[in-house]
Amino acid sequence: MKQIISRCGNICSECPWSTHMRKKIAKEDWDEYSKQIKYYIGFKPVKYEWEGCVGCFTPNNELPSHPFFNFLKKCRTRKCGQHNEIPNCAYCRRFPCANTVARNNITREKISEKLGKEIIDNEYEPYIKMFDAMENLNEIRNKLNDTQIKNPKPVFYKREITKLTGEFNNEGFKFVYVKLLEIANSNLKIKGIDTVAGLEMYKIREDFLWRFLWIVVLFGEIDGNKLRIDSATLYDNRKPISLPSNEEGWNLYFDILSEFNVSVELEILTDNLYTPGGYMRAKTPKTNEPAYIIKMKGGSDLQKLPFFKVMNEMLLELQKKTGKLGFSNFKKLNFNPLLD
Image (cartoon, rainbow, N blue to C red; front, side, top):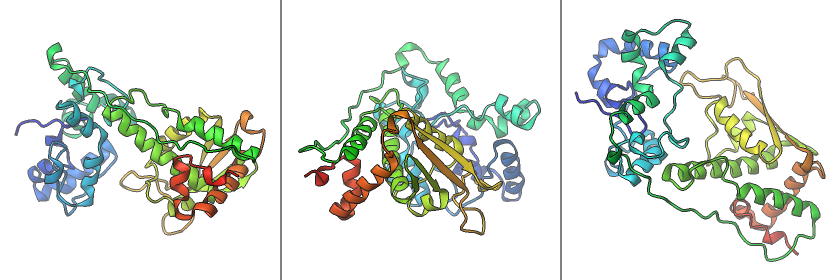
């Protein structure tokens, strides 16, 4: 069949999670094929009832109703390609950008290093190349002429921040508000926020970061300028967000917070941190015990007062005065209910 390249550079027509390969590999050969994929990639493509991904070029109204396909509907690279009317990232003038979902963590070199041996073509082609997204996109880019490469159509976004109607009488609340305003006005370490992919990534980080701050400050254990929260507590209060699936995902947000002089440390409590599907556990298997603890500490400029303690008092007061609208007001920095 004709090779199909996804928006982000994966080869759909050879992907073990796609309908194409699930139809191509005979039932009696599937178990052995799955074992080989897991050996090289680390994840086993189990057959599900929806029988595979139909690909990111399928219009939303033609996607199966199975919840799995929500990831396609939300994919920032898919949305960006659609907006700019290009088949994949290789056709974009800003390629490679940091906002695509395409990654270079599955390459011949990295798999060779992981397995401690040289990967030959007979291994790379059937088990690795379909996920070597950046290499696949570079191959496409090298074959394009300049007229085929397009500038992305710009998008604009204005962060919703509620203007204060007065002044804080509580100096601690005022101090916390200034720091939160600093975070709200940040680009959250995203370059290219004027593109669909960049804006989508910003919204994802924004949604997560404010919910994360809300959860840790209200449910974490606070000792003045220090805070700790375990993964079980995070998991129990996470909705409507999803927790990062791996340590790299957490480190991204820790890096963002470090820009605002908040240091964060991840303490792993189990040797069985990941599920067979490669997702970070919130709780250790067969127990309700946490799999990890997140420790936060305010830096020098936050040590003028017990920052987390004051922020906790501020959010509790906001929740007391606005009820179910507490988080919505927090995210918009609407602290007017706390003003005298």
